[in-house]
Image (cartoon, rainbow, N blue to C red; front, side, top):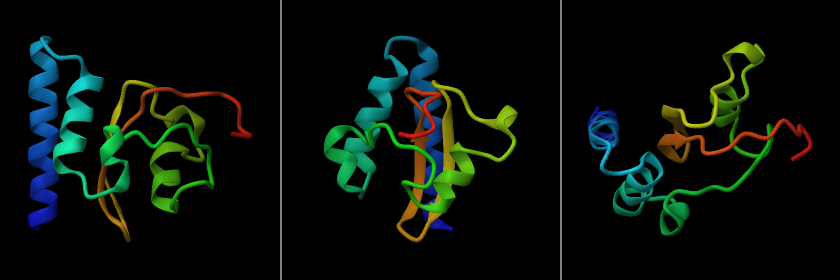
Length: 102
């Protein structure tokens, strides 16, 4: 599928550029989001802000808030592709807050 190949290519670019160490991961992610995203958040470098479980689509909840808390991805992780009715997404977790009432 063309979309998944594009996501794979972006993940490789993200990893390769961040691995070199010249560019911080948040900077690379924001640049790629501005360049490639079709989401309104692209203007903010893909930043969706802080949100809790039940705020976004269920596919985001499944990826970010698993029932088994030991599987919760920590800040600094890249998750994706996450496929929703809105498209294919790469999620960069910049911060986690233990407050469940966000």
